[in-house]
Image (cartoon, rainbow, N blue to C red; front, side, top):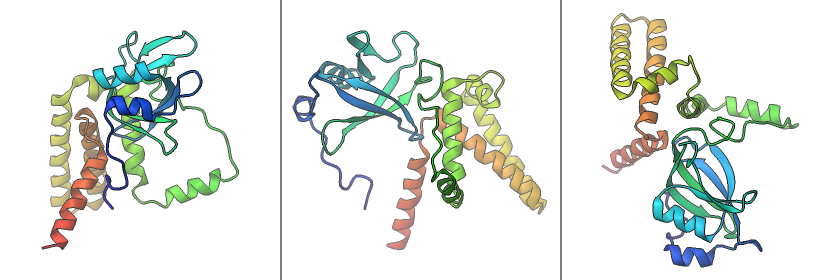
Length: 231
């Protein structure tokens, strides 16, 4: 099944405003997700006007219950959220926004508002199951780099790369590619493992800077595989 199968066709705004089941205060919870890393960033509330402005401007707008006013995310901090898609759940009472965050989502300055954790009895088992996924570290790496991009912690190497910009990142990708070639030519697998890991890290930084999700690469590889099988 393709990524788009099973999804309803996107509704025009006027129809969507009537489709959503707003509560007695005219609100619906909105979960905000990083479109690239798929991390959940925050949860807020929207009303008809904030949804309308979100669609019209392409940036996230919410309703502040504490201030009783519309809230343009990033208007004071500069950490705007460029909206890539808007969906609603099967009950039509909760919204999901996939966004490109331009900085931390949380007022505390963190990439995501969901930084706390609660211990569960199944936590140990779940951790062990996750570690059995041989590619889990790639998803974790994408998430960490997304966090570094949003928070820009002082002294972090990833912060340095993002602040130096695309030319510096491309230079590092080129340097690490050369190191991989040299290691392979030397038939030194210890060196090759180390240099290939460096290359993957810098490639992930490049993908984040270019706003290209790892999922897009996976779909491209899957598409090529399907085409090859059908030849």
